[in-house]
Image (cartoon, rainbow, N blue to C red; front, side):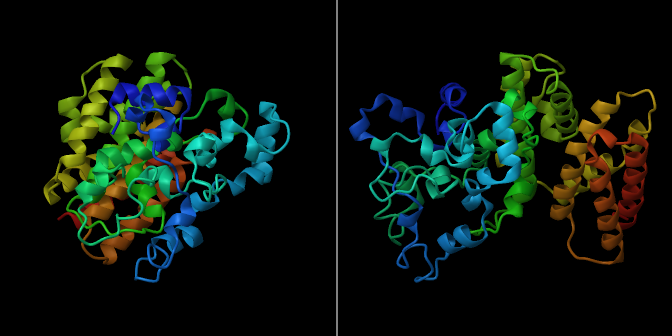
Length: 377
C-alpha cells in the first residue's frame, strides 16, 4: 500500500491511478514494472472460470456492474454530460471519463500484456493490482496469501486497504463534471460491497460495522483533503454531516478533534479509518448506537435549523442505521418487519434531494425509534 501522501499525490494527477499503479513502482524503469494481463487471463476454467469450482470470473462477467462501467458511457445521460463538458465524439474514449469507467485505458501501452483488453470497464486488476508477477502461481494451494501480496497482489483482506482501493472512483468527482450533470457520488463501503454479487467469502466477526465505519472515515478523510486543497462550498455540508455522524461512535469521539480545521480532520479521519478496520463490535455497542441514531428525530424537527445541513445528515444517517441494523438483527419477526418497513420509509424520505422535508424525515425517524424500542426490550 502506498503511503498516504504519495497515494494522494498520484491520484491528484490521475484519480484512479491509485487503483492501478503501486506508488513504489514510480522508482522502477518501465521494463521492470509488472504488466496488466487483462480480465481474460483470469477467466480460464483452470483458474477463476468455473472449471475447478472457482467461478469468480463468471460472477464478474455476468453480474458485476463493474464489468459494464465502460459500456454505460455510450448511453444517453453520458452523452449529455460529455456534450456539456465539450467532449467531442465518443465519451468512451475520453480520458476524464475512462479514468474511473475503464481504468485500464489509463495504463501506458508498455504496461499492458499483448492480450489485455483496455476497454473492459473496471476489471480484476483495477482492484487486485497488475497480475504479471503472481498470475501463474497464486491459485496453488501451497502458496500463502502473504506470498501473493509480496509478489504484488493488493491486500484487499485489509479493510482499510479495501476502502482506499474503492474510494477514489466512488467518491471523488471533479466539480466541472458534477456541474455537467454527473450524479453526486457517495461512498459507503459496506452497503456498496453488499450491493455487488460477492465473488469471495468473508465471514470475519463485526465485518459489517467495521466496513461501514472504516468507509465513512475514509470518505471524511477524502472530503477533508479536497476541502483543505481548495474549499468548495457545495462539499462543506456533506463534510459537516460526516463529522456529525462519526462523532456519534465511540472511536469517532476519541479520534476526531472538536475542530473545523480540514487538515486536522483529514489526519484524524485517516487514523480513525485505520482503527475502525481493526475494531470488533459488541451487540451492546450496536444497540447503543442504533438507539442514538433513531432517537435524533427532534433535531430534524427544528424549524430553525439549516435545511441543507439536515438533508446531508439524513443522507449519511439512514445508511448508517441500515448497516448497523443488518449487523444487529438475529432473526426476522413482527417487530423486525416493522422496523424494516419504517427504515425503508426513512430511506425514501432522506433521498428526496431538494424536495427534502426535515419534518417528514423526523416523523420517519420517530417511527424507527418506536419500532427499535420494541425489539431492544
